[in-house]
Length: 264
Image (cartoon, rainbow, N blue to C red; front, side, top):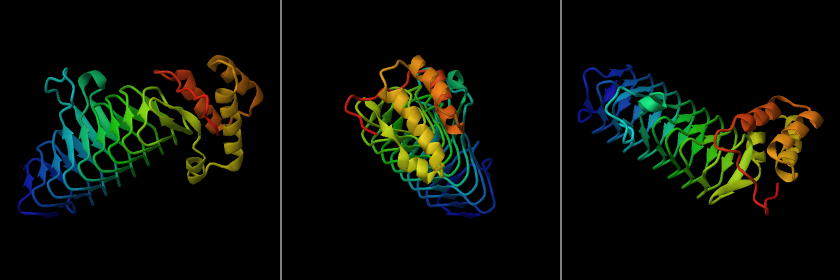
């Protein structure tokens, strides 16, 4: 281990042998840190927090602190962070609450840019990018491969579907289906995240099926039930189309609509 002499490390913290901890960082009693993780100056890690291998935690980060929830009464709740994430300066991540399942989690290979906030009971998938000052309310779910623009605010209990793109400054108050590109205050669907689909190596044939599904769901005058029935009748329901349809069927906060001026 390479631990700066000014760092404050609780003797019961579980720290792998090759972890690096910078000047004046603080690591609490119930924290576990995996191999190859680097913790910058003045970072503050507390609570029942488990951090995986190969993470880079920048100066001033504050994670594992109590949830900002008036119902929280000091219960043992957790934060779990996976492997190979980059957590930039002044990011804040709170632990879960008993009422929300008791856990906040971040997956693998995520980039959390400066000043982003992940509230209690949020669950972040793999390969997620949160740009500067993006903020999540409690109980938000972000699926794999999502890109969240700068200064985006996401309402609590919202789910963001896989490979969606949220434009900067957006206000997100409804669930965002997979593969969609959204923008606005409140945000609406503007089209498909075609760049994200291509970067994720989704095949041309699969993208063509997603486009046809989008046209029926968002460009026809059918209601949601009618549109889904038509998709299932007329389109080859591939793996990705099925992912999109199933998300819309079970959405809790309502499918995000399309602005009249939207174009794909």
